[in-house]
Length: 501
Ligand code: CO
Image 1 (tube, rainbow, N blue to C red):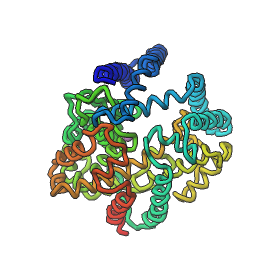
Image 2 (tube, helix red, strand yellow; image 1 turned 180 degrees about the vertical axis):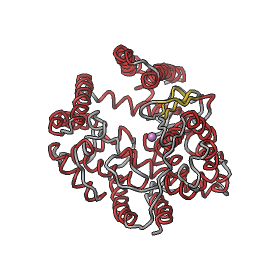
Image 3 (cartoon, rainbow, N blue to C red; image 1 turned 30 degrees about the vertical axis):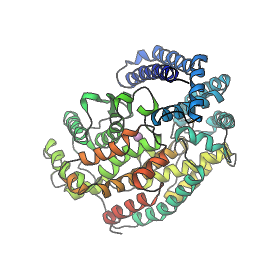
Image 4 (spheres, rainbow, N blue to C red; image 1 turned 60 degrees about the vertical axis):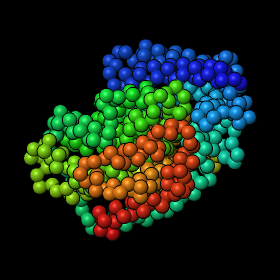
């Protein structure tokens, strides 16, 4: 392949990214601005654009270009940038090619029906009603794994979709190590005599909340000239390219932390997207590594930074000033303990930092069992209850508050959950490395200066795009492979202090 044809390949690829970008705008608008009556035709518009995108990606013309680029890659004739681009496009392309069109259609139709059935079942708190549909989804996911190929467990093939290159064996060992630490540690916290005061129940006007959220995001380094902060039911981040990154939050008049925590989380995701060189748009060099690494950025900011005493030393007086009188008599220490209160709960999305990963490990164990065939769908409620009892010490009153709470399984997203817990682990390891590299990191934070940390993340994580797989990235930045110790040590130190253990 001469430079002309690699040029042609990259041109075609950029077109695909432009279509993707347009699709992202439509989806963002659907969740943020679109009036309710727009939903029907918007759905069809998105489906038709998604179809065009897929056709383009697997078209004979693009296939030819990808295949010859792959030959160049295998012959070692590409420079580092092009090698990364071709490697990553090939990963995606060969996956698409392995799945028969008929199968993709069947999976899309089945999961769309299954999400509808799940909504009804959750409302009626009735798992039995949902079981036959879920069984069908599991069966298709297992077929998908067969098409994609794997070494020893079909679950590997699914995990690889969301966390490319992750080893199931390593992941399992890491999760078990984490679980065996968290369960007794949670027990000790629950046994503590420390009682944490709730935030004063007052009215926190939305305008002041919004202003504070924008202030925090700007301090973190979110570039409002290259992004927006809006409102949606479920907070999320999307990007059209690194100069246009959208985040959302949601406001609760009784509790300003609901919006603050989600803004910090989403701004953490957004800093990643804004930190990718804009000139790299249109190829994998302009994209994030994996869901796990993405989540490491949001969780590092939301939890390690955004729930630390150092961070609030600067921000808390400013928060109080925006809500005159509301927080009188509620000290910085009270506030810090409040944002870190640990309480085993039924719902994953409401979980605190200590119990969150346990929710994930529980789901990981179950979904792996389902895909490998060692667990049966009809036994799910029973297994769920047993594990909730074992890990959290709590009883599940009904399936809506148990096995029916998440949209992931009905949507066919098996293999996705682990990325959330990986985010916690990668985040703690990145932060430990940043602390070693940056002199006085926490002192800077106490005076509201977050730029050193942001620049460190930009240089070591964001700027690379997909140049390195997660495993290589963590080795390069921290000097070792993923190690759960960092997260466990962080939790131990912080919560031992808060709970006087
Ligand atoms: Co996130």
